[in-house]
Amino acid sequence: METVSGVRRGGASTGARERLLDAAYAEVLAGHWGERRMVDIATAAGVSRQTLYNVFGSKEGLLQSVVVREVNTLLDEVVRVLESDGHDPAHAVSRTTRMVLLAARDSPLLRAVVTGDDELLPVVTTRAEPLMDVLGERITRTLRERCPAADPSVTEAVADVTLRLIVSYSLQPIDPDRAARRVEMVVHGMLS
Image (cartoon, rainbow, N blue to C red; front, top):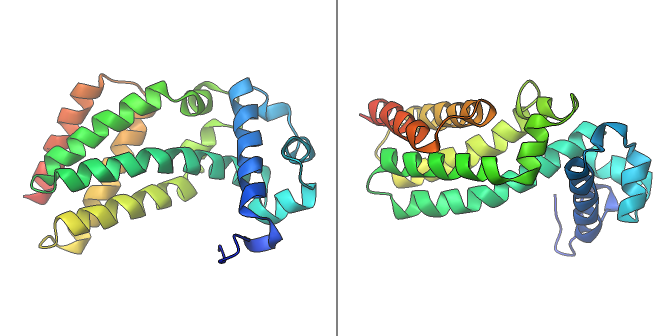
């Protein structure tokens, strides 16, 4: 929870939090995540190990936050596409699916997570709940705004199915255009 002064839980400033995220990001990209300890990451960020634990709780919590930060940046663009294509939500979801798959393919962090060591992959597969929650909430909220007449349970289901398809296609690469067409068909059927 951020306060007006920019201080987060545990007393770490927003700047310290970002430095920790940046240090962890660098370790993932360098291929050193599995061999790094929390103290190594804290030292690289110029903060105490206790601050790192206070802010992120665990090494996995830190990794999840790094991935969520990266994906949130992408979601800002996704939301802009969904907002501009409000007249055709199925087409908007198709466009954003293609955009996300291309970004996932080109993102050094997401490539490292998918192809990296055994500690990395679970953050987008078996232990992806924090990531899925953030993504699902943003997609659901945007779809509800774009389709106010739709049943809320339908927009939530559309967001969930779309998100799960995108994650699946990211892990098992497919031509982004073909994936986008498939997702559009599914979403169109669900919204009809």
